[in-house]
Length: 545
Ligand code: HEM
Image (cartoon, rainbow, N blue to C red; front, side, top):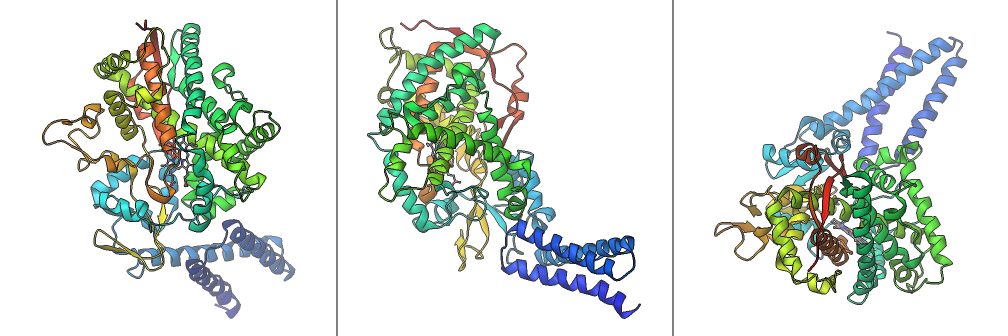
């Protein structure tokens, strides 16, 4: 072999090793990396073609150099990730998950991460290496250190709004910035704002009842999950933009496809958050158009709000805009976009799944109706939340719905440089760690017996019997601590109001031909819960006495 040929083989391999070493210590943007590699390929190709061997030879030589370079970088990376030198080598996990984050990207894409991770824990135990640098820890006593404690872990690079202009509370990884922004958000969720949002909700409930009847009459059956999604979007439009909101999906449908764009944007955020370098690259492709479309819609609604005469009454945006350190227009647009999405998407899927379980368990449905009949009357067909809040069975139903209706993954957090100890096990600094929410919600250790069954009675005094367990602190649907859901009280209010109104005003059963197994099997989650099939029901109005 000539020395030139040896250089052609060795140089790219060496460069591959250097790349691995460099990227192992320094995170750089995926699109920059791609740009550097692409530019280098062009330079190498130009240099080889100028040597006089012709374009074809130059092309094949460049391709083989590129192949050797990528092969060598990949080999170094994989060998290191499998070697005992890797900080997470002691933790078990599937082979593909240990060598590449792309395995988890694929798992998320197929939508069953919540149950896949639960199965991985059954196979490997409480600590599972679900990515090269990611651990899932299925232990209730890890929740406090990871999420709830004052010095809990920070969010990592998975929380990025791509390269959208502005910044928002949900995407802030720096604790100081986040705390500051949370203080700006907090006044939007106080005991004095909730009654104002309730007025919006009650008005929308009146519309909801009319909408269910109208659509059921027009089509013979009612697509309840669609009506619920429209209700939550309309309501969050009111809550975020006040009377200037032009969201009227219950009346007009969703011609701008806001709901599907919102779900697609959340799914992109979740899938690509697992591999931030890939997010950087995909940001330049049409794949993230849904995020941009949503941003445009939020900008438009905000412009309307800015010139509205009702601005400053009571809506989330007014609270954010009146901060003593004013937020930029881009920040306001991103915050309002997030608020609509956070407040409608999660609630909508939880309510739909809760209604599915209620309709499936007609005994529970009837018992709830009798409880609600005590506070809805002919004169008062719109019961207030202050009354509903006191109803034990309604609250048990809502808790059970939040437990089974939120097939959420573990929210990702990053271990600080000095590492932490969880249940006696040391986790090295820089690891992404999560406690799987769904696995906790359906674990026998937390909920016994029948943790996967819909049994609201487990939340009542006496539970499901003397040996039963119902660990309230294990339900992770709103998360805990510094980054937990700010809209929790508002979400409870919305859940109580809509479920109570639907159940008291209608008897419901599944439409003929509706397949319960296919419906529940079609549920997937990519941070947003996607119901693969509509919840089709037949409804009959009830007389309120
Ligand atoms: C049943 C409905 C809801 C559920 C299950 C839910 C769940 C969650 C969860 C799990 C988080 C933490 C996410 C993370 O750390 O990655 C979160 C954050 C958040 N949620 Fe909710 N949410 C709901 C409704 C709402 C509503 C109605 C609002 C009102 C706008 C809202 C506003 C927020 C905000 C502002 C944050 C970010 C908090 C922060 O980073 O400090 N959510 N939510």
